[in-house]
Each structure stands twice: as C-alpha cells, then as structure tokens.
Image (cartoon, rainbow, N blue to C red):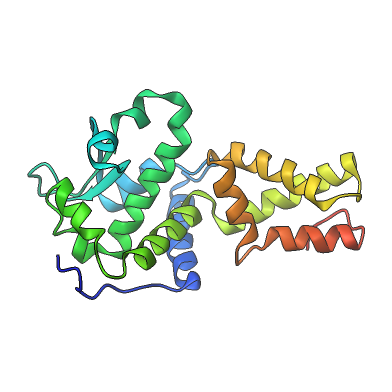
Length: 219
C-alpha cells in the first residue's frame, strides 16, 4: 500500500456509532455480557481468526497485526505469544485484539492488501498513520467499554462510593470508580481513566458536578 493512499478518517460520533452497532448485535444474540466478549465479535461477526505469532513483539516491536496473513485467503489477527501465555497480559491481549479488529473495520480495503507482517509495518508508515491509529484505538475502547453500559455502571458505583466516602473529594471517588470499572471490563486502569473522561460520557465531569451539588446520583 502506498504511504499516500487515501484512507478515510472518522469522527468520534461515527466511531461510537460503529461500536454501538457491534454491541447491539451481541445483545440481540443474547451474548452481551461484561466484560465484552471481543473474540466473539471478531470471529462470529467478522469471520476473522485469531492466532499466535511467536516473537512478534521481540522481532517486529508490535503486539498484534491484522491482514490476509500466512498465505491465507481469510483475515487473521496475529498476536504475540506472550499475550496468550502470560496471565498478567490478559488485558493487553483484549485491547490488542480490539485494536486490530478496529483497523479491519475502519481500513478494510488497505488491510486486505496486508499479506505479511512487513506489509503491516509498511501500513504504519502511512502519511496519516497517527490519525488512523487514534481512530482504531478509539473504536477499540468503545468496543471494550461501551458508552451506555459504562455510564450505567458508573452511576451504580458512584452512588455506592459517595455513601462510603462522602462529598469531600471527587478525586477519591474517581480513583475508586475507575479501578472498579477497569476490573469489571477487563481493561487497563489507564484505558478506563481515559474512557471515563471522554465524550460522550464525560463521567469525570459528571462526578465533579454531582459532588459540588452534593448529589448521591450521576446525571
């Protein structure tokens, strides 16, 4: 793929809508649970297989790649073997799979041209790679931490936490709430913190307002 080949970029609203549609399909199947079953979305909705590539991180400095790899006509997501073998990397595994799926959804025409790991690394040299990668990361976050469900759970945790710690410090509530939700959704604490601060939920802003007004609920 040419480093100057045109690739579409997406607004935050479009990315949230794409994620919401995937979550809606899970719900319709009766398979929606928290943490989100990202492997089901990958394999059942998109027909993409997940496989292991030993030494991917060590040799190529990436945790995962996606494309028509290993001389296959099917789309594959390859992840470094450490993500499978080491339990403490489970959350990173989930985010890696979600990000590679996001690239396949958002940049499908380009991704279908990826035949080798080197092809994927070449894809990363695209003139607008940073912007496209941010789109993929945003979609991955919205898939693993669906806005509607995170907001609902945040409201529940806020009411419990404010009863325990009071209205003295919104930062204390934010710290405990983000930790609880990160564990529930099986994502890293940093990923959850970022998600809680961004549109459309802006949960941290809601907490600030609720604590200021001494409310025991989030609007």
